[in-house]
Length: 85
Ligand SMILES: [Zn+2]
Image 1 (cartoon, rainbow, N blue to C red):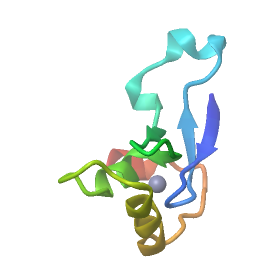
Image 2: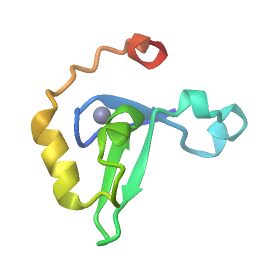
Image 3: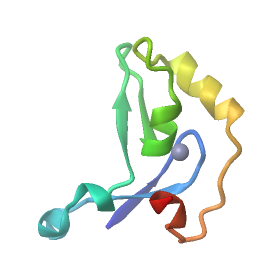
């Protein structure tokens, strides 16, 4: 598995990556994805932060940056408990 840091909470997020992960791939094992905005900006976000974005309009770069400023960075501790709550 590869991992990438969430732009908003800075948590290290597991993502499926590489051909070796192909047969192990499951949505449960992937915790984030790259969000492509209508203005062409791209941010990697975990699903939790993605859900925190406004859903009454297409998120913009300003929305993502605003959410980041309202979110405390999460220490990556290798513990997945948050994912299952
Ligand atoms: Zn996040």
